[in-house]
Image 1 (cartoon, rainbow, N blue to C red):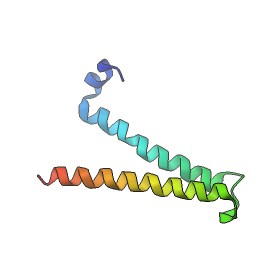
Image 2 (image 1 turned 90 degrees about the horizontal axis):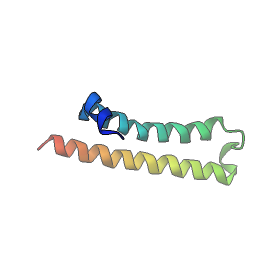
Image 3 (image 1 turned 30 degrees about the vertical axis):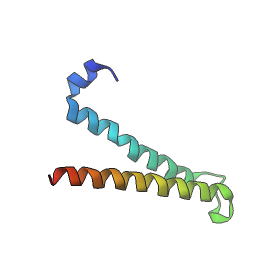
Length: 74
């Protein structure tokens, strides 16, 4: 990103905006899993891929949030 934008937003708002990428990633995977025409239950291999991708993204977000909370307690 541009330094100008970081200065205008402030670091805290800029960082919050960038953390929305995790939410967007989970939302995209859930959308593909629930709305996609190619997925008809868990009988299709792509359904399992989306389920694993959602789980992986949620684990990453949980780890990030746990580290964030541990830093707040110090």
